[in-house]
Length: 155
Image (cartoon, rainbow, N blue to C red; front, side, top):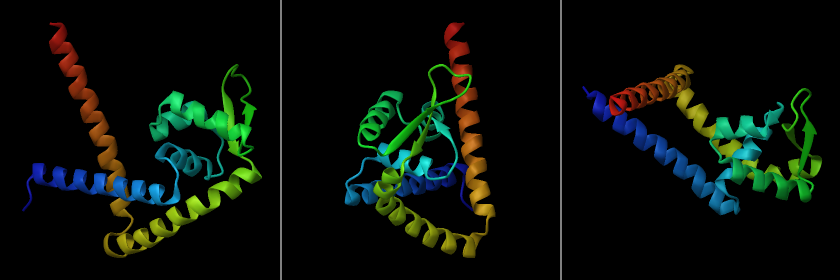
């Protein structure tokens, strides 16, 4: 039986290895990770603000802003005002942006679909739910530990 420490280590190694697989794919296609994250985020058909994408995909605001300005100039993105928000804009892909994104996203989706089919065959949808649960639990644990450390440092 694996200990909690061994399981956590295996999970982290698998997570880093997964991230590295995405990174290598991005390198092969000549696109930066932050750019791929933006394309991936915008391809879900939902409305997104720069703030949403920064928080969900952990892209620094300055990095995202640089990409958005460049891609808007190239005609890949459209920015539309969000009613009731003075400075926030919805970001969406233009038709030219969708064409630009297609080869990058197709390679990712094809690999993801294949990997998910294999994973679900063996582990079911509960696997994804467990990963989501672990993500939430680790974030909460880090938050609690950091709060306790700050409290002890201030005493």
